[in-house]
Image 1 (cartoon, rainbow, N blue to C red):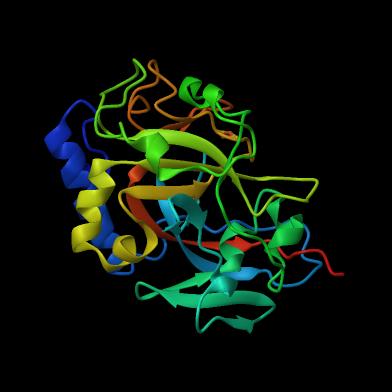
Image 2 (cartoon, helix red, strand yellow; image 1 turned 45 degrees about the vertical axis):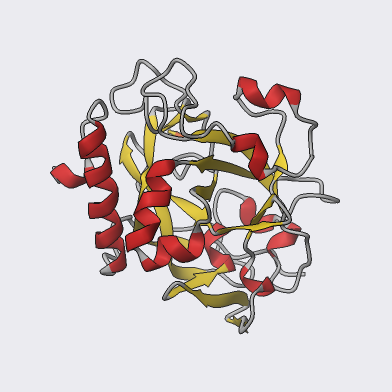
Length: 273
Ligand code: FES
């Protein structure tokens, strides 16, 4: 077992080492950190092998991490970056892609677990890209927020101290959100955290510098095992290694949001119009 990839959760110093080590591995192009997922239905468009940045799967039956969504801030509100909304975006193989922080960022990153049928993953689809409050989320602090409201930076002002009685306080403040899901029948589930650990790691990593802002990091919250929506960050005090990580309650998979790695998998095709 790679020690750097499995830092002791009770050790703050080793936790930070895990971030830097794994980020460096990712930037060195450790494609294959995840396994190949083979779709059972190959009809449709825009599927195929893809290399994505993911938050690392560290335990349980899932075979790879969950895809990262680059984050930006506009007028004090959080936005997920859609590749088609960036300068220089191109459409190839029926997916839209762009170059961000030295990485090819593609709409295919999100084509798994049924999300591939979401209308706002069409390469030419339009959305405002704000991350919006998901009131079905597990975080007590969000209950004061209006469902569907844009998530604001100021709501995370206590991120350097925040805790919920699980694991260590001060590692970051999470929220459940949706992305590109207004005026649609289905939602793309997202988790976002604001963390001083991410803020520090982004100082030495080109990809994290481009895909995070003010310590905010987001990912598509679809478990790569059997597609549950994981309970989230700091939601299990009983599973070893999950108390300061992201936990999927269905079969106990664990993901480390402080370890962004490269994963290769097969994106499911989108339905043909
Ligand atoms: S661990 Fe099985 S769906 Fe998440």
